[in-house]
Length: 425
Image (cartoon, rainbow, N blue to C red; front, side, top):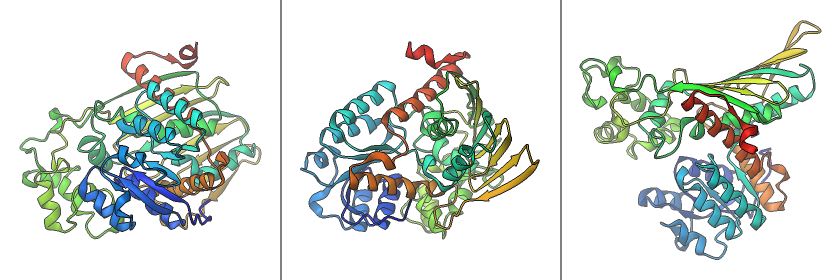
């Protein structure tokens, strides 16, 4: 993947935020043309239109106006706020657009079902942004597992290290901090990982349990003497979550200016950052926000075959690649997003395989280790050919993963084990 040149394929982008911009840049780099945009924020809309030289008549404030135009593009990328996904996807399908929909697919099973009905009725190419399936690392790991070298998978440990400053940026101060405005953290952040685990194991789980909470980013953990804004806080310099340190540390680094700093300010100078933190949500003390999503969670999964898996999501890490250990009847595999180590029980020897991550998007913080590029390639190929076989999952597969997330949230809140097969009965 990533080698095709998709000259002539045109895309309309709904939502010109960080994800929409990232997908658009990757699509253009692969030869596609960005033909239209819908974005309610004037500055973001104008910058996006200028960067991609979009004709003025195809630059829209309102998504409904874009979708009312007769074939503004060959396909659409939907990267609007999570709560808008269902409405935008259903409208796009009814207009006959192939679409790439950013995860999560939608915030409820009912809305996911609406999308599936619309997509299947229209017969359009459809992909959800499950980028972890598409990384060179995942393809390598799948090859090793499918070779049979470790026998039958018995159990899996999977860790998502969110990163302490990423948690503060996105899930304490930022857009995904409140369930009523976006969704539970397991959906908005980790539906990636639940989907990935099901892909690796090759089954959907039958039983789910979960524990987790918002344990640290609460008022009772506010340091003595701390104020509600980092720029004026006398104890800021000793705080791990200092907005001044996090965002001033981005200045001069193009990748970190693109994200996360672009979420905070357009003025990337030190003075501009400090001025933004005076009033921006991103300048708030992490112990004085209105956040309610969890900062750590574990999920236990039991599959019909008897295979078990544990998933841990935690804020309290460096921002690095996910880490996975897979235990089989003939060997084990450990992976860190770049390297796969296989220990063979027959030979009692360890072998190491490395991904060829020569592209610039291989870091944990940018491009999901090459998954963004590969997903765009697969989607553009499917659009150009009308054949969705290049896409690794479909709408119903996405719904299956989301249903596991909702089951895990139910289990966490009620202290019970939730049976997925009971949901199907």
